Amino acid sequence: MNIGIIYSTDKKVIEKLVQGLKKGLEEQGNVVKLFPDTADNFTGLASCKHIFVGSYITASIKPRTPQRLRDALSRATGLGGKRSIAFIASGMFGARKALLALMNDMEKQGCFIIDQRAFSSEEDAYNFAKKIKLKED
Image (cartoon, rainbow, N blue to C red; front, side, top):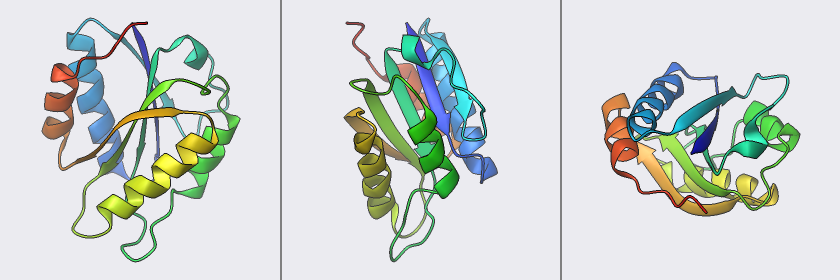
């Protein structure tokens, strides 16, 4: 099954989480396509059955999805109706609000949110990805 991961490139920790997710999902036999928020196009995203979207905590009081990631979500075609999972790099404060902000931006683009996670490490993301059961239909 094709799975897409759209992620923020502002923080290196997100890229490490993406690598953990990619490794775990590929071990299940999935084909993982990576789409950084700096990508010019999102060719191949429409063929993905599930979409993961990764961000980070921008502020603990009033977190927002980073502007570049919001722009990338608006440029990405084929998100409507896709089963989607929001994830962030966990921090001390603001994780829940950051996830809510990210999910809100994803829903504006038509994503169907099936899960959300705050990962503390690449290993944490890997363990989640190798155990998750995603529907193929």
